[in-house]
Image (cartoon, rainbow, N blue to C red; front, side, top):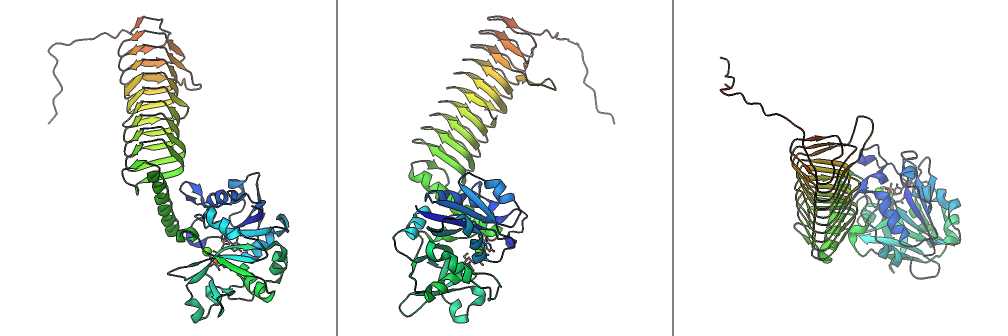
Length: 453
Ligand code: UD1
Ligand code: CA
């Protein structure tokens, strides 16, 4: 779309009671401003400019990108003054769409409708709300034409009864923008340069003013407090849940799933309550995720079951695996098909082959495991010598008994067997049995200590 987008994000957000700039507070895992940027980018604008101010360089530092420019507004003298700061950076021949960094749910379809059509006009996104307190009111004349926007603090009692409000989002004509901004004054209750005063200037200039409303009333909600942020989180959660339900995903409770990123699901996926999905997550057909799991940047193959209370971070899980309950899978892990990782097993930077199992109480780190390996309960790969990390290699068909330590670097070749309780410090050759001798000592007639009185 051939428009400039300017996102106003310099305000302090006093009511957030936080040192973090308001637009960096996360909604569904991403800064408020990121949501607005994603929507703005969907319009393919000529240019995107962010006006920042409060909180120093935190905003540009967090969101810098090649397609964005940032301009600092210091001090912050109102929305009109904010847009003035962006003027030198935008294409004066193009119309300018003004968005707010703290209104994150605005939809691209609504903005496309606002920017549609041609000819010279000022277009304002307005909405009728049950409680207009705090918003600028849209004032219309006898023939229903917009003649002004009056801020709450400047409004008369009669104007305060108007239910149609200014959402703040508007499309301004390139031709007039600079001259209107120049003519703004701060003679008002807040001593600010109101962007909304361009409406009265447009009327003076006999310029066409049009309005447009959002598809969904929740799109225009802004964040001014933690309460409002929590409300928007709720709305976003429901939107995500509905999208998944519409795509055929079975959710045990649509109110108890958090998607903080992109979750893509195959057919017949089932997700139990209280699961969190972060970053980019792909679930194959027939995957089942039990209650209370956290999956971050994970790819899970078809028919795999993730049992309750498992945490999987940055990993590739093959088809038909069984993970958990209570499994922890850390970054750099790759599991082939039919792998079982059971309770209280931690896996890190490990590559585990088809059909291998580690079902109980183990640590497997910096390890390559072949096919059909059975790792006994309590087995630990000792990958850290206090300074460096080393790899453990366990080849196909190895059987490892319970409570074994594999002191890396070490290789256990194909088909070998490690006896329970062994501490393996040297390579084990194919087909061998390795054990470390521990003699059982017996003391007949042993008396257990008795409690002293
Ligand atoms: C503004 C509108 C009001 C509208 C309301 C919708 C004006 C004068 N009023 O009021 O009509 O109903 O939004 O929420 O425009 N900002 C800056 N620099 C500034 C001041 C604000 O960048 O100097 C940014 C803020 O960060 C925020 C947006 O502009 O993203 C709106 O500012 P805010 O102070 O919330 O405006 P309101 O007084 O609520
Ligand atoms: Ca506001």
